Each structure stands twice: as C-alpha cells, then as structure tokens.
Image 1: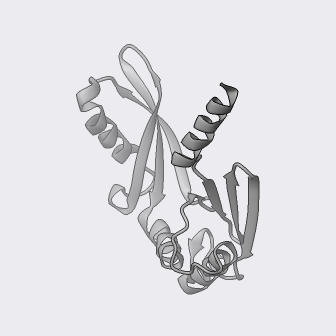
Image 2 (image 1 turned 180 degrees about the vertical axis):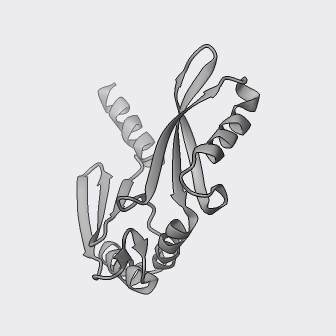
Amino acid sequence: MKKIKAFIKRFLERLSPEPEVAGCSLGFSDIRYVAGSGKGAEKYSAQIPEGVFREGVVQNEELLQKALETLHDTLLPKKKNEVIKAVISLPPGVVYTQSVKTPYVGEKDVEESVGLNLQIVTPIRAEDAYMDWQKIKEFDNEVEILGVFVEKARIDKIRGPLERAK
C-alpha cells in the first residue's frame, strides 16, 4: 500500500510541479536575482554601469537593458528569446506609500471611494502616477488602506528595458 501511495504522490507531483519562485531586485549599482525551487535558492547578479541611475531615475535605458541582458544570458544562456518571470523590487525612493482612512461606503463602492481618496493624497499628480492600494484595517464606519504611488515616467523607463531584455 505504501508503494502505491508513493507512486501516486510522485505521479501527481509530475502533473502539477511546485512553481518556481523568483525575485529580481534592481538597485542603483547592481541587479540581483534569486530563484527558489525544490533544490533551494539560486542567486545571480549583474552590475549596472555607473550613470544609469541619477536620483532614482533611469538616465540611460540602453545601458540598463544591456545589464539585464547580461543577467538573462547568465540565467538562460541557450534560450535568448525565453522570457524570465520574476517579481521585481524597485530601487529605493521610487515608490511612495501612505496610510489613508476613508469612510466605509459598502463593498460595491469601495473601489471608487478609495480611488478618489488616493487621487487627493498622492504626492505626485494623479495623472502622472500609477497607484494601487490594499486594505489594512476595517472599522465600523471607515476603512484604513495603504496607498502606493509611483511616477509613470520612472516605471516606464524601467519597464521598457525589462521587457526588451526578456
């Protein structure tokens, strides 16, 4: 019976293996990539040339893309066109956060209410920002949320090289 259970377990693991989890941290001087799987964590890095970032803003997208391509070639040397999926951690100072309390207006209107409140408190012009939020606490008559704001221009200058480098 134990052999049958072990066989079934191995069979099911092959049908739906554990997903690989990966994260990529973009700093001002290097890119760090960590992939976790059943074998443990694998760590890789690539240097970002000086002058790519200035005050948290990408100044040279081409050099950033080359650094990302170097990392891609290290990870998948024979699969240049394969996209590497990872959660990206942005450099310091790019993302702003703010806790906001908003009146509870019911589940169906919460998105609109929170969106309006975020537009009011954002440190960046709302039309120049990507914004998102997550509920922190819910009280009887109000909801506390954590708002996240980032300048579109900063993200787009990072997103472009990431997408082109795959």
